[in-house]
Length: 181
Image (cartoon, rainbow, N blue to C red; front, top):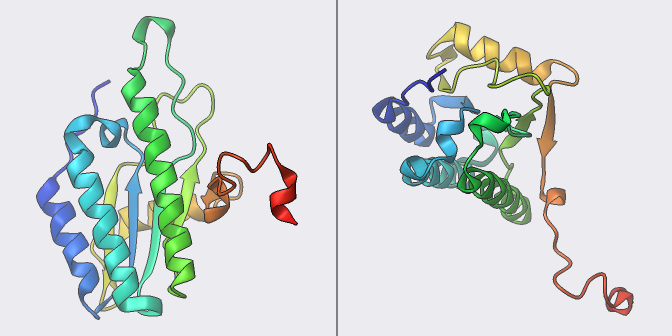
């Protein structure tokens, strides 16, 4: 099964709309493995930066719900996943967690990042990648936004990504417990 192509123009247009005061909410779903490929690192970073800038600028005037994968799909031994995908997955989670910490430290609301839990037999997320915005009370696509919000509100379907997911102890945290005294 091939990954759908990501329409960069739509993503950029809707992410840019986050600066507008008429946009009060957005839901982003980035669960396709294509987001972890080297060719989309630039767009992924651009989106991350734009979301953080909008949160810093707009504060409580903008609600951001983001859905990413909690775990990578299991692959058969015949179709091994490149190690670069695993590294990109870990790096992205680490960076999003750090962003949450930075926004909380600035007393701005951080995006709510929901990690979609895939079952062992799922080879992909049951929801398409999307970015939908609530502009003047209307979603850019009601059906797609509703699908994402339903998954977010389904008990046990997601788990939050927070700043607590970051190891802030440093290299000597476990070796010398006296640093906590």
